[in-house]
Amino acid sequence: MNTLTANALQQLMIELPGWQLDDGKLFREYQFMDFREAFDFMEKVARLADRHNHHPDWWNSYRTVRIWLTSHDSGGLTERDEQLAKAIQALDHTT
Image 1 (tube, rainbow, N blue to C red):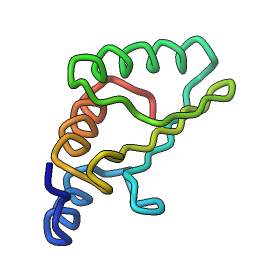
Image 2: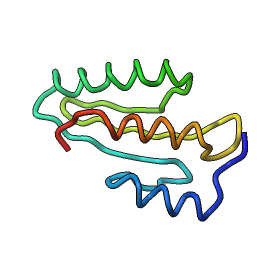
Image 3: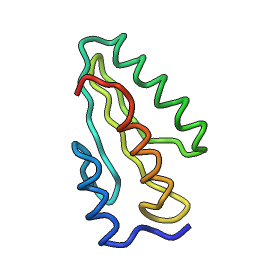
């Protein structure tokens, strides 16, 4: 799969408020009221990731969830990352 062009990335950043580029990856940090909410969100993202057959790099500590998306096999960001980020963005979350 081809990596996204600079123009496509620029447009994607407009379409995904709160997301940013971090070392060539799409990145977003979410804050929740407590660990249970954070974990519930991670479960929702895990189900989305399985449906998309594309799995994030992520980190969790108490009420914070950080997500990084990249297509390792393509060497950068692809349409798979864009689609999963948009699906995650559409989830109900607190921040």
